[in-house]
Image 1: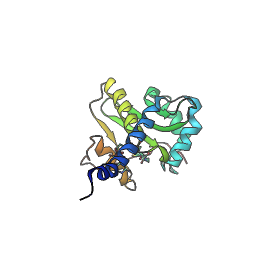
Image 2 (image 1 turned 135 degrees about the vertical axis):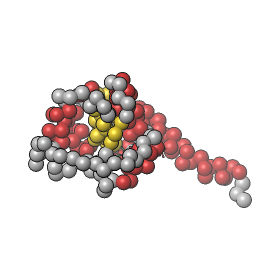
Image 3 (image 1 turned 30 degrees about the vertical axis):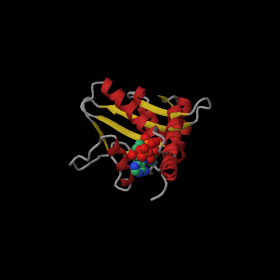
Length: 168
Ligand SMILES: CC(C)(COP(=O)(O)OP(=O)(O)OC[C@H]1O[C@@H](n2cnc3c(N)ncnc32)[C@H](O)[C@@H]1OP(=O)(O)O)[C@@H](O)C(=O)NCCC(=O)NCCS
């Protein structure tokens, strides 16, 4: 058996790194999206693999700014205002929805995704929303652990969609 001090050092190093990361994450400001953020947010979504050919991210932003824009949130560093994360929440009167949750790869595992989700949830609760739904692409199953960590459970449903407006 290794001496206790040595085992402590081995165990504590990752914990210190984790605490440091959490501290960095807490420094990020969560605020409502502003029009000046558009390019940075589209860049963020592109880097995070959320931009697909059938959704034009600029049109998605334009549409969101017309419906509950106060539920479109970004995480940014201070004082340089660099966008590092986003979440788009919305309440349709029956369910709350989460879209475009993203954190830049170099800022992940600092608690920023959790803070964005908590703030999105706070907005939805304030609007009277009883349940949050979200969809995960079948090619993106690695994100499931994150949502489970936040208390989300897989629903026994088939997800269907019908396009009303082509973005391509
Ligand atoms: C999903 C995402 C937003 C998470 O952001 P994040 O800031 O790294 O999340 P957090 O730091 O708040 O993670 C909280 C906890 O969730 C779990 N978690 C997060 N990412 C995980 C991963 N890749 N694998 C396993 N667990 C993970 C961990 O339990 C983590 O806590 P820990 O770091 O103390 O272990 C980020 O990975 C991302 O932008 N992914 C690409 C875009 C995407 O897929 N968005 C969702 C579309 S449905």
